[in-house]
Length: 190
Image 1 (cartoon, one colour):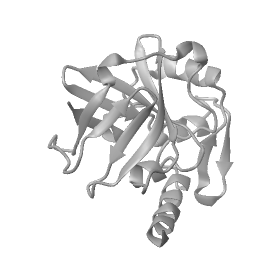
Image 2 (cartoon, rainbow, N blue to C red):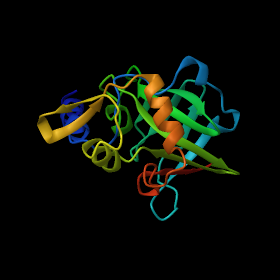
Image 3 (tube, helix red, strand yellow):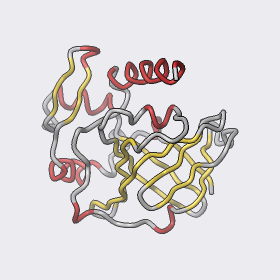
């Protein structure tokens, strides 16, 4: 339990430092919710060089993803798949902790939502989140006007935009490689 608290504190520091785009509201509307049959099943996380990361594959299901760390610790993440135009996305948030938890679960431990674009080609899947640095700059120079609060600690953003506002943003930037930077992508093989 003590290790969990230390990990939780470290993770919260990471989150508050603004490494990922987080929203207190979900990124989808009920009308945009869909299923993606080809996502269901086991997917092996790949490292930066395209080699499989040691450990168990992640399990993608309807409504949840079971993630694993190198040491085999599982954690459940609640997910909702949705579609904006021709692009598929995944909204993820914390689920109830299992017997233990891992980095992927603690990244979602605050009741916030994270969005990733989903691209599946043959036996490969890529999850690409919105690039925080790009969005922070766009908010500062007012080229993007999503509702948010700026947290004093770490000068990071917590978004309060509605699902409808997120829908407009995602539709406009879905194909923009600066917004959905490959640098931040998680890659998987079936």
